Amino acid sequence: MGNPLARAAGMVRGVVVVTGTDTDVGKTYATAALALAGYSAGRRRVAVYKPVQTGVVGGDSGDVDDVARLCAAAGLPGGALTTHEGQRLSEPMAPPPAADLDGVALLSLDDHAERIAALLHEHDLVLVEGSGGVLVELDGEGHNIADLTQIIRRAVDPHVHVVLVVRSGLGTLNHTLLSLEALCRRGVRVLGTVLGSWPADPQPLHETNRNYIRTIHAQDGTNIPLLGAVPQGWGAADGM
Image (cartoon, rainbow, N blue to C red; front, side, top):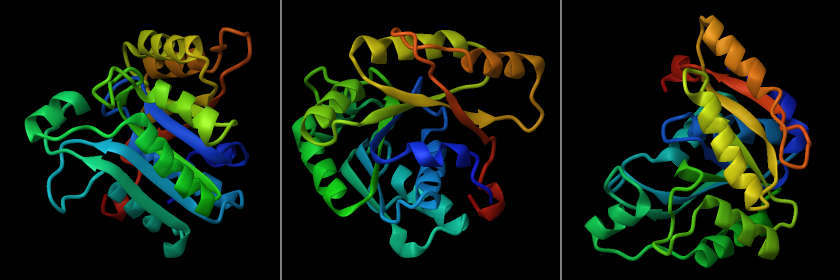
């Protein structure tokens, strides 16, 4: 199984936060591809951290388990990747209502930052996969993945960047532009975008969306590159 984000390999280092324009846009697949890209570029110790995993119970597989299986199927050595969850909630919804239904308190952003710092101390690359979209609340205090990124920049890694995973179909341009504006207005540096599920038989709509996303610039005028596209069903041949 090839790595669809191989050309992003030299750009991923330190802490990289992976978020999306929505839920089910392909963040987990993009995270796996970025882990492989980092390893191929010499980041021999890679960690994936999921601050809040919702919709799973007990020993059920979560997103970090899917990342590990995808990476193993692609040939990543077993000792090269470690995965961690900050908190696991049973209901498939945003963290605050899921925590309410489970009767537990959510971890603070500082708690997550401390865990990320510990991982960075032992690893060359730490990928942080968010829940849902950019502004989904993580901690019950109104803070989101963009806020966590700012804390990481101040306290953990001054060079932290975000990768935004986007759709290829109808509506993606508005969602992508809104998400990028939210990130840029908060001073979050965006490494690039990733098309999370690229169809095997793209239609003109998909092609024109991809071409437009390639042209997007940040508010300071710098280009926000399209890092690659994860093929729809990537990893399916390996039992995923």
